Each structure stands twice: as C-alpha cells, then as structure tokens.
Length: 192
Image 1 (cartoon, helix red, strand yellow):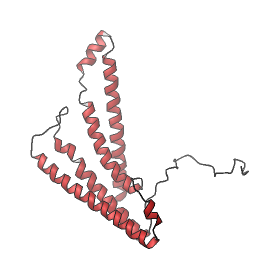
Image 2: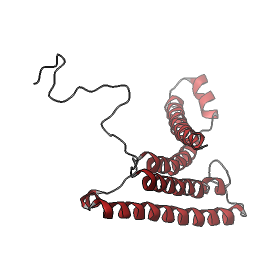
Image 3: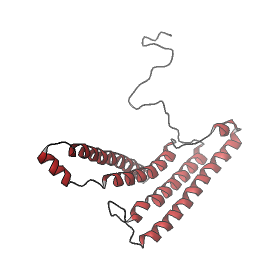
Image 4: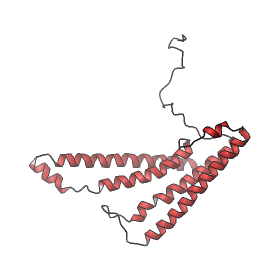
C-alpha cells in the first residue's frame, strides 16, 4: 500500500510540474503568435482566450509544492539543519532527531487540521477564482491534503528511524545512470 502511495505521490508531482510547464508554454506561444501580422491567423488566435492559464499554473504549482514537501521528507531531501545535531553524542542525537521528527509531524498535523477547517468553511460559500471560476475550496484543499501527507511522512520517517536507526538520505552528487570514477584513480587504474 505504501508503494502505491509513493508512486501516486511521484506521479502527481510529475503531472503537476509537466502540466504547468505545458500550459505556460502554450500561453506564451499564443501571446507572441497573436501579435504576428498575419490577418487570418491573427484573427483566429485572438478568438482563443487563454487568460486563465496563469491562474491554473499558479494553482498547479501550489499543489505541487505541498506534495513535493511531503516527498522531500520521505526521501531525505527536505530542508534540515543538522550541523549541531551531528555534533551530539549518539544517545542524545537519537532523542533530538525523534523529537524533531515528531515536532514536524505535530506542526504539519496542526496546519492540516486548520486548513481542513478553513476548507470546510469556504466550501459553504460561493467564492470562486477570478479567471477559472473554480470553487476556491478546491484550490485551498491543497493545504490539508499536503499537510496531512507531510505529517504522515514525518511519522513514517520517525518510525523507521526508531526501528533501524537510519534516516532517509539523498546523495546530492549522485545522478542515476552516470558512473563516477574514484577520485585520484585514472581510467587505466593509475593513481594521479
């Protein structure tokens, strides 16, 4: 079940990122092509209304950022300052790490709950977005959904850390599919 959630999370982020890029690309091409002085083409392009593209792109990036933060917690790429924590003795370090993960879970759980209450309140209004005329509660639904997922990811990382003593780690220097030579050793095995 967790693998399905992991894949869904990754596909959703990729879809939102790719979709937003495509929407903005089409809108920019439309804007510049509409200015071309070709009578038939210009008239046809001016009839197409893409004023909603920027608003849609903003909403897609909001959803992507909320789910991307949860992905970051799960994979170990979320922002964290651990310089001082790494200087602690191992018995204290483990307690501070668990406390930090549980504090992150508490914070995102509170934000998710407050966001859910806000969405519930705004869902009973007629408020819609400016260009898309979409109900605003759908836009704001990103807050509780993303925050609760992030809360779950904090709890998942904390549970795995207590069980195994390992945190998710992302190697920033590693690029999948690219093999790196050992430093100081040439292709023929000769030390440089």
